[in-house]
Amino acid sequence: MVTHSQFLKLKNLTNGSSVANDREVLDKAATYGKMFDDLGLAEWGVNTCRELGMRMPRHVQQRCIPPVLEGRHVLGIDETRSGKTAAFVLPILYRLAEHPFGVFAIVVTATRELAFQLAEQFRALGSVVHLRITVVVGGMDMLKQAKDLVARPHLVIATPERIHVLLRDNPDISPVFSRTKVVSL
Image (tube, rainbow, N blue to C red; front, side, top):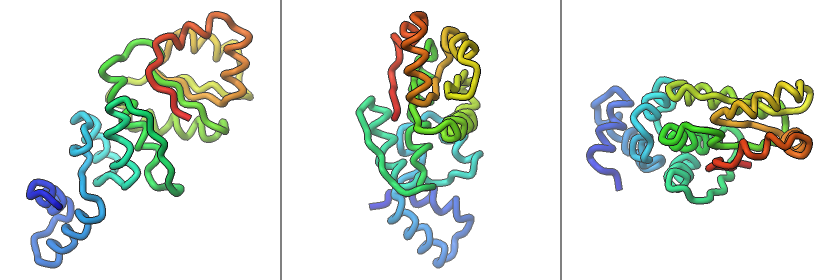
């Protein structure tokens, strides 16, 4: 069921008022059902989504964002380019904005290429939060990465092998994660 306010929001996005556009709005509402501001995100997050051209949340975002905001464990599985990254990035940023001290989240990803792509997405979606990110992957100076971690960025994006080696070989690294609230794999 589409509420009147949701209908008006969707209609505003289609920039029209004809019967055909009303049908389009209702079709979109039936498919998507919710807007970003219906998911519990802060106004800055909703505005950032709009600025980046994200008009309506995709299915995976509708299903994942609210429970992640509640602090629940979530497993989101969907096709490539379905919106999975924003489904976990947006709630992490929202919660980080409330508690911006220390390493708030660590995202462990399979490849260095994906680590850098995720860092770009976090920077784009979190520009308002003034996010400090450290990417920890192979092929880069381990001493610099260790120093970056000890400086306690808000977010660490790492490959499993590199973070394992840094934790194993440097006793100053483990305490950095003592207040971490989110782990994303």
